[in-house]
Length: 348
Image (cartoon, rainbow, N blue to C red; front, side, top):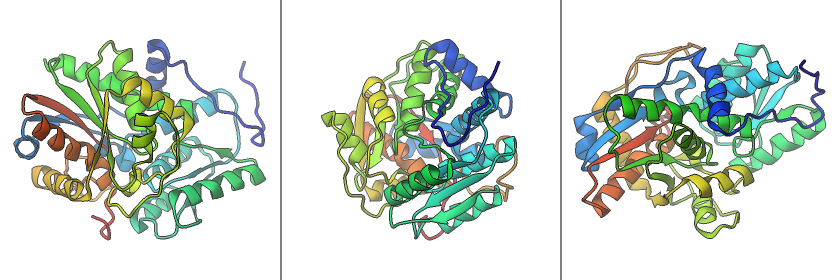
């Protein structure tokens, strides 16, 4: 029997991180949306320098992998009788995912963003029913504002780096990818590369791949203008670092969260920084490969048609793949995660 929880008390329903628990979490998403496709393009092969497959998370509703975890979290809230408003800090993709899931489950949603945030992402969060509050000059400022608001109002604070249910829900990405590689005869893949912001993408991907019984080398990628998570992984210490201006604004995190930082040290086999020029070049390679999307409603359920509009945060893994292939010419096949289709014209 589910219990009724008052929102002023902290509560973060989770799922066991074993294979069965993660498959149970994945079903919350698969009931609602099909798996994202795995595609290859000769343009991207030429850009990277070897055979390159793309797990197209940017084609999911709201344009990023984060809808997976948000759907599972809200389903968990419903199962446990947890009521009340949901609040989070976001640069846009986490906020859009929560807003879309809250819309599906009939729940209020407030998203804190820093001043100067992507106008397009703010507009899309509002279109999905979220209240958007501008707070501070950085993501970490916005996170402090969201935390204070949750404490004062009793709303449920959803931090993407410290909410296990989000990470476990996102792991459906890894379960899907393992199945696709097996079904397509691509088991001799040399490495899988994923972007790292707060770490919920790469951590979830690693959990899902390993739950499916496969352990391809997994490499995290981050902008060199936001190196906090990279340093935390290499040094084993979560030390805040200043964030510089970056086209990969969705990865601009200065304070490493505890939960995903720990998971990354378990699942990542490598972690590399990439420069701004490489990220911009990767964004352009996606555009050349697949072109622009058709206009779409952000509330639409299901996959968008294939397109190559991938934001900086979503293109970091492709940029890293090119760096890795240049450093290791013996590599023959790489898989990259493309997540984030919300390119602000001012940034992209």
